[in-house]
Length: 148
Image (tube, rainbow, N blue to C red; front, side, top):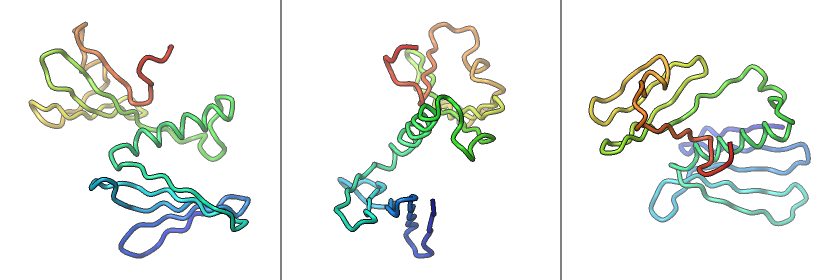
């Protein structure tokens, strides 16, 4: 596996797998919005493919890639990721109030954007929720409606 980063104004990344196939990742635009272009170049010269991910959808895509890697190893972290932990994104919803978006770091601390007061820090998501049963926490890495 090899990553190549360009030095040009547009940050292009090329990933080459063990078979010589390449994944080219570069900035693009789709429907007038910022996006990321993911193109494949086959090592044997065959046809490739392209997918364009809107910039605001990249976090969900990366979370899905991590989940898939985790499941492909039978629940074990992929080789090289054993000591890596990732922050989790969440949204707090409370009827009659604007949504609060935030991130919980592996050590439990939280940063959230409270639309009424601005950026807030907390020791946990639970401390933001308190004992209010009307507040719902939605985690970005959990599919809506999927069985728990």
